[in-house]
Length: 136
Image (cartoon, rainbow, N blue to C red; front, side, top):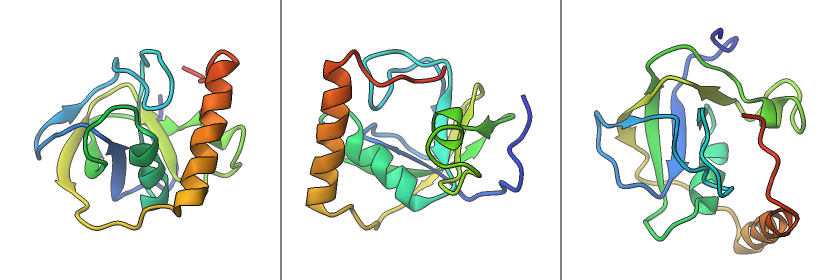
């Protein structure tokens, strides 16, 4: 695995998990979007992508965006960069090594309710058809 090109951070991870600085986010947990365990941990260099992460995360916890630092090598997320956004404008990455929580973004702009509803409906359709395909 190699480091993604031109990716120096800051990096973000959107979730509903209640974490603190110093905690580690590790691969091997359930996906935010699909009912399966993933062998990668995903993160982004943009607040917008992290916002989607926390807004779409399953669970009842408060939506949170953490500032994270990779503890090892990482690569472009092929689920987005190879399929939807060539060139990785969303700065979406994944790693098999943990991410260290270094802080939390206290104030961020949510997506408009109608746009969020559209995305949730899209994911529900994918789920009804067997779930979103995730390159793991």
